[in-house]
Length: 284
Length: 205
Image 1 (tube, rainbow over the protein chains, first blue to last red):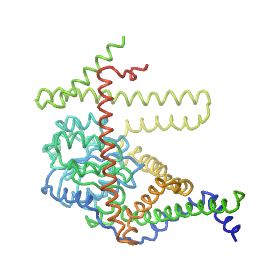
Image 2 (cartoon, helix red, strand yellow; image 1 turned 90 degrees about the vertical axis):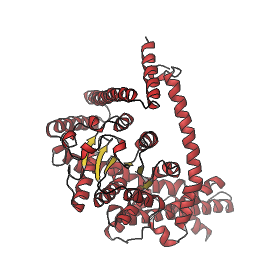
Image 3 (tube, chains in turn purple, orange; image 1 turned 180 degrees about the vertical axis):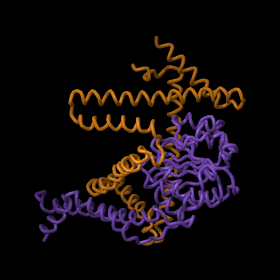
Image 4 (cartoon, rainbow over the protein chains, first blue to last red; image 1 turned 90 degrees about the horizontal axis):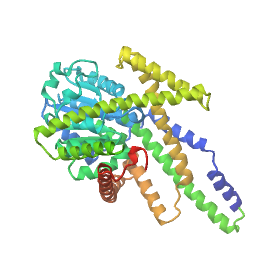
């Protein structure tokens, strides 16, 4: 019997990794095709982000820096759409930019989706300034000369000719800064916009980076934090929409469960084979 | 010969540090000018990077080096996207917009998605409770993985508060310590460069 068990656990440890890939693939695809609609409860951090946007007076201009590229779009694109829809519903006027060269295509798409859903028009209800190189230098420039930094918007319209842009030329003109980012750009915004210019700031990040920003949340340097697809799903729930994040959470839940089961099985197998090796004098 | 770059570095670094703490409008105007210079430098860096990419891949194609086919694809893509972007623009409805949405975005997302498969395989093979520290990490990881997704609350209502405590107490304390250490390290490194102690950026140690 011990031999049979030993054989089973050893075979399990030596399993072809392609079986694991198949499991992960199925765990992702099946919930996307057949949603389970698991409940999503909003965390205090996401509720704080939502409340910060709710607190902005209706009709205000709000600066948004959406700094991500397609590699992390699964997490940040649904977040952008949910936050934009919230801003649009509150009749806020987002002025959007990106510090990532491959970001504008995604942002244009997010604006199309959110704008169409809430009936908002470009240049009237929002402005998309496009990409600016320079990271920290660009963020410093946003502190006092946004129109100088972006003489034209993404579609080539002079920013001086846009009514929204007449009301904003510095961080101080925006009651809140929203930065959705998957990189150190969030740190630059915290250091410059929040710490130097004292602009209230809401941050969205990938799940893997979210814990880096907890100290800034507890110190009051950021007002809210939306972390990863879960944070995006929580935000969608607060806004009252069902987007890609809530749909994706079923898949993420199932994949997490599969990985946890695999880790437990791997440890049990390692323990069992080790115990068997001791029992059989190291011959198995 | 090396005193010139050292002087420029010192002057720029010292000026920018001083300006950061001076709210006077003259200081802010100076900062704006320096930022415009920085923008020009960044733009030239992009051009230089593209040029360097071209040279490296062109050499490989010319010599038929290993993987020269990929270099050829890089050269064709670089040329095509640059020319189309300059001629037509990059917004939706243009050729570059189509390339971005139909090729770039799915490829980049796919590459990143592959991580889930490899992480699952690696966790199964390598994540072992070998000693007390590793066991602690393993248990914490399992609690976090289950507690941070929707199914966690569904399985046990104690998961979310437990994960919140892990994030708000041990994680926050460790992150603060790391952040302070990194901050002090960054200040130290910056000062060494500004005053000329660290000259590695000049090309020689």
